[in-house]
Image (cartoon, rainbow, N blue to C red; front, side):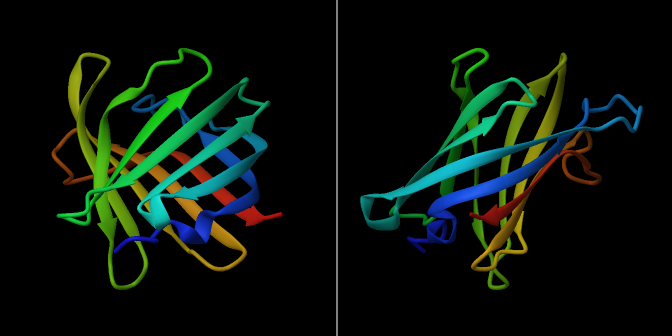
Length: 151
């Protein structure tokens, strides 16, 4: 359904935590930042810029909805390398308002499955997580979390 990401339009404050995937250290870095998000194509596209000075970069997410399948493709690029991360994660929101988006990628020489999950969506808050799986989604390791609060 178009407009799935309309909840994210506007300006947000964010606290983000990340850890090195598959490191087993349990060490997390935390940084605060801000996000500005825009809706395009009457809700069938969405773009935002996140500024995370504590992590030393900015990033852009571009979300595009396929008008036939209704699936969303989410693309990511950051200011450190300026390269579009491919392939995009692809998926949709369920009836409970949780969005799950997946891709198959290579990470440090091994094939992994990537999952983005949007949840806890209200007028003033939302949560995003990134997780990796080495067993085709049998188990997941979350390596990035972001909580958003509307400014």
